[in-house]
Image 1 (cartoon, rainbow, N blue to C red):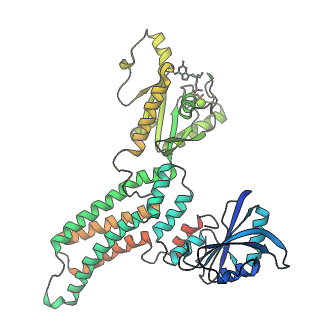
Image 2: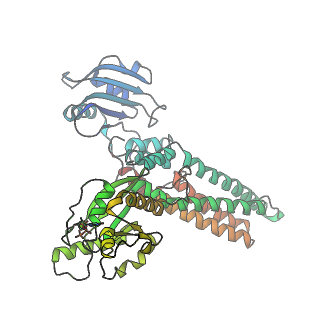
Image 3: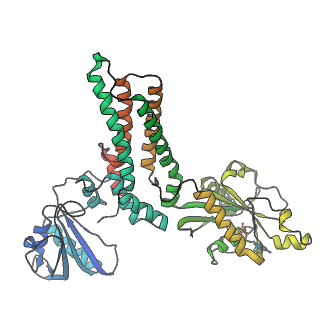
Length: 460
Ligand SMILES: Nc1nc2c(ncn2[C@@H]2O[C@H](COP(=O)(O)OP(=O)(O)OP(=O)(O)O)[C@@H](O)[C@H]2O)c(=O)[nH]1
Ligand SMILES: [Mg+2]
């Protein structure tokens, strides 16, 4: 875990990813950035240059030997990402050269940055709140259009301003209640209880909307896991391949073909879905490897956000009873309708198809697959929360919001029961505290900060 570091040091890191590239960037932040850069740079005197300017020159080692031809960018405090003096050295993108530039920066007095330390400084220097800092991490790790858009919305401060609005209105009421306490003997009421009660219902509704959005937020950020489950030979791997539109899994008429789980990503309407093909589940098997695969399938089914249960229409055996508790997250798909029709003389699909179930026919597989994608999307994302709304994507925020909802509840019943001002003030404070935890307006535990920033990459 990252140490809560001192802001006095000047930190340095390679900010571009490891490996060979056209250019690579070494970044310095801190009050000695300009002096350090000046010491190792042959070109204009950097300390005399204006902010937001670029300068061509050479980086040299302590024996004055050239390391690289570079362009240096100057961003002076407070108008920089971290709020401190920042120097960006753009050199040639060779890991060897960049490591040497890093080394001379350290020799000249910089310290190697910890993961996320640049962003941590931006937070500590008040350039962004905690929600925005976390959004930077989410932006870097965004893997789909949905996660990208939501991280951007958080980074721009949309979410923060919504939370701050809630906080400010609570603070206003809290101030009035506290004022009443100062005039306790006079029995005055500055804070209008009826207005406040109405306002409480409003913020409680907002909080619950944010809490509800977490299902979608989690799906945006981490993707939705979809386990493809069914008996051996039902056509699970065939279905996976069709969804992915590539021959990813081995398909054969031998039962037990898939033995280990196969995981692949699929993008539906800009959201990431993680499809997991599993070994066919049958109750009795003596094959040790197969039974291990089956156990894993059951585990995946339990863990998955959504289950696609694949059933061969000709398979007479009972469907798998243990899936019953997961009915709400299960979509049933029938396969081998072509063989079924042959056997039962062109039975129309309507005779076996009930609503909400999907039939795959090899002659128009595409239609069934499209329908299945829509069902999966509907089940996972739903339509309760619009994408334009603020969406909670972070488990830490979700936990804090649950506490906010609880303390709002306590406050409301306190008001309804005519609780005295001093006790109301306590509940308001608890509510404000949990709201403040999300944006970092109150002192956030150092370990929590450490955990947040250590998940960033070095150089960010
Ligand atoms: N006729 C017909 N054959 C199908 C259909 N779907 C799958 N198959 C065939 O059924 C056999 C089994 O398909 P797989 O996709 O390997 O089945 P699985 O469920 O992955 O099987 P395991 O991995 O053994 O659990 C293959 O020969 C497929 O070509 C279908 O709709 N109609
Ligand atoms: Mg298979």
